[in-house]
Length: 135
Image (tube, rainbow, N blue to C red; front, side, top):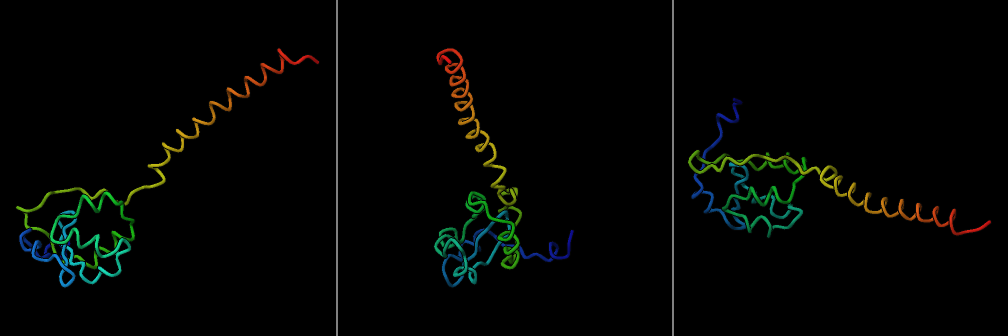
């Protein structure tokens, strides 16, 4: 266990729930507590997104957006501690969303949807040419 983990400050969820405005905005992601007050104006999605989740466990919303590796690295600057054991949800960090991999199955599907009709059209054209067009 790292020194940072051993020295981590513990917060009760009821303490986090007190920090819900522009003056003090805390939220929980994967059982860690973040003070994002100084990040409100910098957040690419706007401060409203963070203020809606202020004082709450924002893990599900954070993962739904699919934050990048850079965003996940930046979070470390705002980490102030973790939830008490009794308040932890024990969620698993899903890591950055792999956009290319998620869409590859869709790309293959759409690729097949035009390849099959093209092959049928080519076959029909050849059949028409050999059987119906006289030299």
